[in-house]
Structures are given as structure tokens and as C-alpha cells.
Length: 305
Image (cartoon, rainbow, N blue to C red):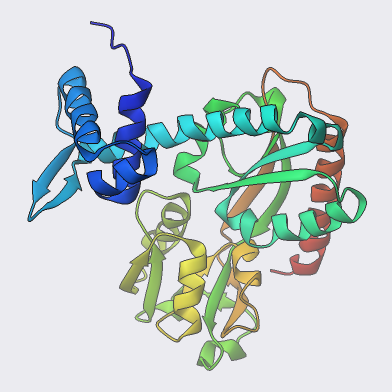
């Protein structure tokens, strides 16, 4: 049976997820609390699964509600963009650049590129969506972007992507660690040391684990976290050592950690992706050229790593 979605029901569901209660959701939507409750109940009846569980006077979303909310938020992102375009047609003459960026490139590459780009294009409006690698395919599928800066490999038509830069992973250690004296840090140097790792099922985790598994070297896997930036923050306060990409690590130099060349080499590839069915504008071309210049400068700066 085909579902006929009711936007009022979706609005009520989204407002409850954001606010945490039907009372607050009613205030956001400027309707009565019973009306919100009724809309949620009607939505649950239509989709045939429970969205919220009430315990101790509070609503708790079910896993199904969390999954639905992620999809709803993506849809609303597109609606917000359309709304902004319609309200700001006059501003379109100066341009609007929508960027999707993977978390490593958001740390150093994108800020550097935007700073340089806006020196020549100060009137261009810019929207940035930072995305972890696992979610990148979902955002690429929406095609709601003008340029994407991604960690490769990416499952995407090859004629719409191009390589940007290839960098070697680095070992990061606290500034007071004895390994700061080493010119190069080898996998065996980390044997038995407390190691801060990215969560499983990520490209970084796979590449790093493979090096140590093949060498038979045991680390003390003390902490797992979900981003390279979080790893750097934990290393900087002395909780362990780790291996990350140099884009991420370079953003923390002088903030409690030191990065060193690591062997065996762990390679990270980064690239640019463009929409499939939409020609790129001159603004996109200008931005890409700036990104390439920044990538070349960064590669030259850290090529010894």
C-alpha cells in the first residue's frame, strides 16, 4: 500500500524529535499539545510502527524514530535551500556555493581554501556540510551540492571526480612523549603503548589495523572515538598515541601534540566530486582552482611525511 505522507504529521514528528516533548513541539508549531499528540498518533498508525515510548512523563524516540529523523532532516535541508533561493533571488547574481566536505579536509584544507577564495569573491554565499565518510554516499546521492571534497575511494561516476592530493599518514604523540625525539616513528615503536583509535568500520581504522595485524604488533587499545579531530584532542592531553591523516593532525600542531612520519606508509587519497547532471559554474571552477593551489602548497609543506 502506498503511503500518502501528511506534512503536518512530519512537522509534528520533527518538532518532537528536536524539542523532546509534545508541549515544546506545540509551542514551536503554534498549535495545541493535543493536536501534536494526535498528529503523532495518526503518523504511527499510518506507518505501522511506534515512534515514541513514554517513560516517567517523558518521550523517548525508538530506533525507528531515530532512523526516520535522519531522513527527514535531509529532506528539510533541501527544502530550506529551496526556500532560501526563493527568498533571495536577487542575491543569486553574486553566487552561492554549496560544499560537501569530508571531516579530514574540513580541518585544514577547506578553511585555507575559503580564506583565499573569499579574497577575490567576497560576495559569494557559501554553505558547508561536513560529512563523515560513511555518510558521504548518501549526501552525494541527493546531488544538492556544487562541489564535494572527499576522502577517496568513493563510489561515484569516474567522469565526475578527479584526484586532488595523496598524503602519507602521520603518527601523533603528546609534546612531552619520548617519541618526539625520533625522526621517523615505526609501527614497532608503538608496541605496548596506549593507542587511541577511530571507531571500527571506518577507512582509517581498517588501514591502521591492517599495518599492525600484518606486523604482529600489539597495541594497548585504550580509547575509541569517532573522529580524527577527537583523536588529536585526546593525544594532546597525553592519553595515548595514534595515527591520522596529516590534514587533521596539522590543525593541532602547537596545541599539545607533535606529528611525525610513520612507517610503513599508510596512504590517504583526497579528491573533488562534481554533480552528475548539472554543468558547473565559473564560481565552482574558480573555487576548484583555489583548492588545487592549497593542496599543492600543503603537499609541498608536508611531502617529507
